[in-house]
Amino acid sequence: MKSHRTLRADAARIWSAALRASDASAAVSSCIRRRGRLLRVCTRTFHLGEIRALWVIGAGKAAAPMASALERILGTYLSGGIVVTKYGHGLPLKKIELVEAGHPLPDAMGVAGGRRMVSLIESRVQPGDLVFCPFSGGGSALLVSPAEGISLEDKLACTRLLLNSGASIHEFNTIRKHLSNLKGGGLARLLSKATAVSLIISDVVGDPLDTIASGPLVPDTSTYADCLDIIQGLKIANEVPPSILQRFEAGAAGRIPDTPKQGDAMFRNTSNFIVAGNARACSAAVLEARRLGYRSMVVTSRLEGDTSEAAHFHMSIAEEIVYSGRPLRRPACVISGGETTVKVTGSGKGGRNQEFVAHCARRLAHLAAPCVAASVGTDGTDGPTDAAGAMADNTTVARSLKFGARFLQESLENNDSYNFFKRLGDLIITGPTRTNVMDLRLILIG
Image (cartoon, rainbow, N blue to C red; front, top):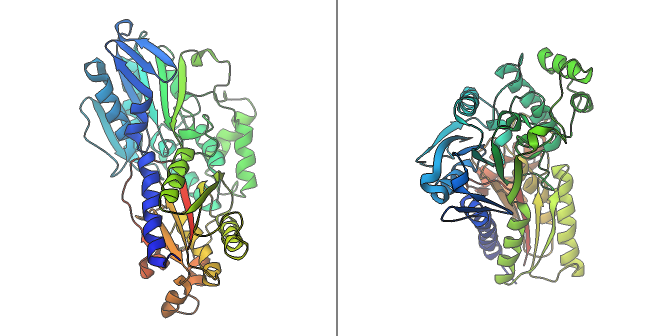
């Protein structure tokens, strides 16, 4: 029977394998090949002798390594470009300008990056040019160009409301697209005179192109009316800044044009390719778990919904394995990917991965076999913290009692999972991974 120490060490090996499989530079390099003047990009081929200039314009937590890979592949053919990434996620680049900015809350540096991006496109990109657009998770917050009449302060206030209300990524990005000049097909409008190829690392369940980074080069399927439905459904309509509410109402009434839709001529010269996603990370995790001797399975790479409910679902599977030997016999490893949501009601510090593990702790305490639950944000950042996630085992609740009989309960009530796991020494700290393919959850049973 595997001990807690072994389970914890194996969990770290498994999520590390998943992170290696999600490497942003490798993902770009695997889909682009250059032989002389022939450039193969996924299913498309370009002759560099027929292209006036090559540019790189993008955003996201993985933007720096994606841009670095493009610099290496394109070499002297590359004219330049600009990418925006999160603070601390940058890398040295030679020809491409790098801007670091705020995430998940946009800031003045994000606005400055957006302005420089627009300026580069309007002043230097010409017909006959090829523009590579690397996008990854975080692109929605980092690609900042507020629509007319919307201030950065308004966007910040709306972002905070959405974060605290438990809005899904689809709801979040529907709102963002209708407050931006670049999202929801806006970048395609600016680049319509050139050929644009978007290389995408997906951080959204199901890889919907119009949601990842808020679909800068993709026809938008959402509307201003959807925005009104979302803020009403989340019960935040009375708290949304007046300028934003007025824009949504004007758009729904047809007084301002909606985002560009399918069939618009501006998308004629755009292509979008997914180069990495959560399914690849899950596949790498299950292979590593099997190498370590676990009977393993991926239950889903598409998990969404409430974090606490997701935790109870995973613990139900663990209990079934322990008491019935289904769907796996021990030692077993259950893996899932996706991204859940937390409705914040307290004033503590944490993120969905840490909350997931905290909700697993009580049922782990009663499990009649050694078991470890771990949840990791593949970008290395869980919520507004320096942790990627957390880990718990059968002893977590007992160890927490020295901090008070209600320490776990109070931490959950106050959304303070970070300080709960920090005091127990069970935070997972990876540092910036410079990729983002959502979350990875592991349940290991000895």
